[in-house]
Length: 280
Ligand code: PAF
Image 1 (spheres, helix red, strand yellow):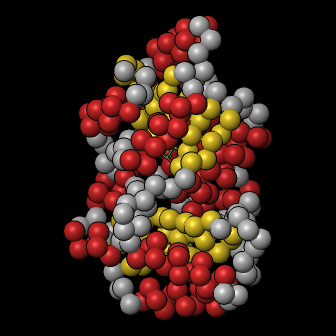
Image 2 (cartoon, rainbow, N blue to C red):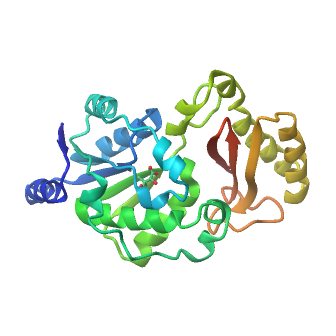
């Protein structure tokens, strides 16, 4: 496995491989890797000749400087995990390499900006869209892999790929969970031991909401019941708990047809913002 830090070097390396007819699978990350990321690498490994993983904590998608500062940076351990998983190239640029000057461009994703993550994280998706577009131009992958834990990010990136005609397949991959149901996330390592015991309640609340919707309750009724349920865990502070259409992520009054309902939440616990969702 080769670790490359400059745009010119990764471009040169990939062009050489493409000339040999190799297909490229790409897994963009911000590092602090866990088994969720490794499942993306495994999938990319199965479907492509070569796997490239980028590790870049992208400053332009953080609206909270404290969150950016606290984001775990664990390049050495990440590289050990990636090498064991059979990754071929790690692209790990500095912020100066990616942004010699801060980008003036911003991307408006329409209604996706105004719900859930978009509503609470100002400029977040513009930052994600810009960095992913840059990475796609640099790596020129055949396929790019993203985890469905960030459901709204997948929706935004699908729009980016379609609207800007990127010549690649965007492959959404299932959420990987701990045994107790907590969705794997780089942020989980910031939870105290006590908070970690409470964290599975996020997934439990989603499951409970799903059951209630299946029983025929309206979204409003379900949200009231879940709000009350969450009150029994004062450590959990829900930022949003939304029942939405899977395609456009707009709120819906009751359950949709099969596969078209998404329940999404962001909950603060111990100063850590956990997000999770269920699609059914
Ligand atoms: O999901 C992430 O880790 C990031 O948002 C991404 C897609 C790597 C862009 O910085």
